[in-house]
Length: 164
Image (cartoon, rainbow, N blue to C red):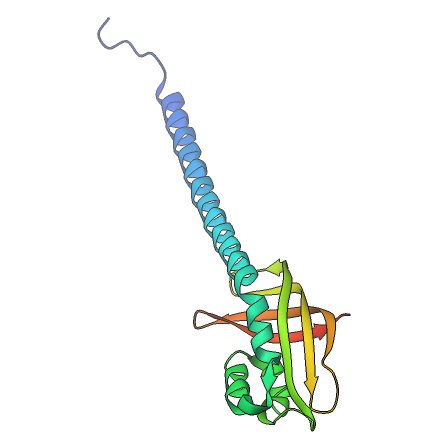
């Protein structure tokens, strides 16, 4: 029985080619799946960071005290970016309006409505207390949508819209 062929040469070549194609398809699937998993992990990390940082960041941008307004505004300028930073620059360069001694934002609930690896949007609530020299403090509840971009490892505000 020496020299007896079990399968023909053509059939063997076809089987080897099919096995090679199957191996390439499986390897491609593994690479694509691992990239998707890595991307999803990065998006989830961004979501977690936004949930943890967005409220205090927005509060720091809008909180100002007349006694420390220059320091407050300098900190706020370091937390904004893009068109929002340019459009809001005038507000971030001056003291509170006459008679206002403090505007204090206290963040409430934060929900991430959209997240990518380097940007995101949150919906959040805040309690805003405005203190004046000539009147009792006024406290309001605000709901805002805030957009962020991650720049140099920091989440910076790129837009804010007061919804209520």
